[in-house]
Length: 91
Picture: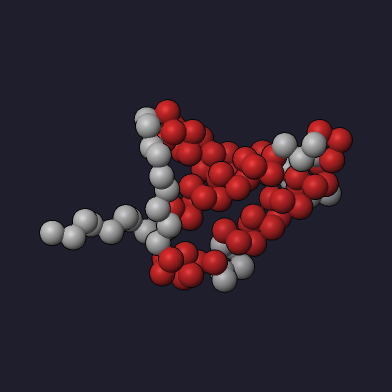
């Protein structure tokens, strides 16, 4: 049986960072395409971890309406936005 995503700090910590940012008034997450391409194909990177997390949603939450799926996506967006710092504004 797959570990439920909510038992993995990789996801829960990212979701907490997302929620903290939202409470501070963050309105947008910026994803650096070059930075995420460097990590997406890594076997332990966010893409494969997301696959495992979504499998856990399907396996454990069927009767509960798969409520974890949106939370995993929000955590994934947070993680992807943290892969590289936001570019400095042009002067």
